[in-house]
Length: 278
Length: 236
Image (cartoon, rainbow over all chains, first blue to last red):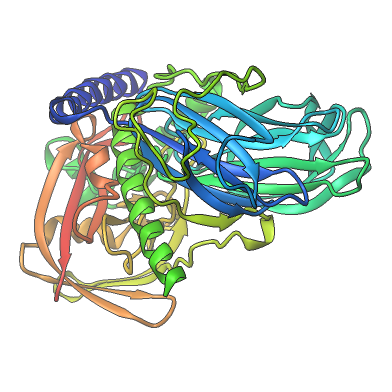
């Protein structure tokens, strides 16, 4: 069994590198594969304009709005965030700031409050690695004017002491969790509980944003799908009743209680062995 | 009008995005080693003068990044209440008259070993619920069943090896829809050689893949050495 698994992983790796090469050649002939950028507006109460390299890109961008993903060539982009009625990018309220976007990277730039309540922007790199089959990824980001928090799932802390602008990434079985945010060391929610779906093959990114003192803490959700990993196999027979004749033809021919008992013994042994391994 | 336009653009972007990350997923395989270690968040607190921020609105003169023109941007709400989960209609029944297969189909996930989970009862088939469904416009709907089990004996899927190309497969879904497929390929492959990424393929034309075990039964492991794989394509 272990050998088989190892071989399979190796085969996967080889196939993977072939695919990488196959993909890279045509791409590099033209341009880089590029970067993906999303932008989240997480400053309460303030519509803004967003300028990228001096060009108005997001007009009257509202708090809680999520823009993108944009496909951009790798490089450094200058972003300035102004009041929504600004005529140009010359008087930004945040920035101008440089966003260095690497080839193949997936990013979210977040305009948000610092712990002390002043506006800032943070560039996060999103984890778009393949998830295990049956699992999803939950990313939690603290972008709120609030001290350290714990994140509760079903009332139990799963992330402790997260501070602005920190993040934490968890890989979880796909499903829905009842998520809440509490001051670090406590279990009384300051946000939530809110049902958050952790979909299979998807990075679900949850932002805590707003201000504790202004009593407007909220959650924002961004999802990045298409990260699915495949099951490692399909174990679809355990009794040996349908085996080819060269090995277990007698089982088919006989189909007797004796044969069944034999098979049962094999399986029981097998189960015990796999339990011992587990 | 405008919102429709934006939505179209969003769809395109989403489609392009899905494609590229799929390609990435395929490359990564089941490799536990991170290929691109995520970077810690970068606090953008040190403003640098933007060489391109000019007084002319909308000007995007050649700046720090070559050809850095920015396409129009799709925008959506981020509050948890506005997140829309895709509606998935699971297949519920499988019929192959030619070989006498007539089985209930249950949605199944992944077992603790990372393999596709199957109904214990070899009289029932399992659909891989994290992959495409019959109504999806691309990829494989994977339905598998135990060829036998100690408790329930031989399953109907033992007859998969009797199927020949051209025979008809009917899949019923939970919304009452019935889809007809024609068998295009039957393969028996040693499990070690099974192209698992081809079975669980989310791209390409929509198709149905039926899988069970076959070949020599290995008494030491309690497993068959081969997978029997039947591929069928939708009848237009």
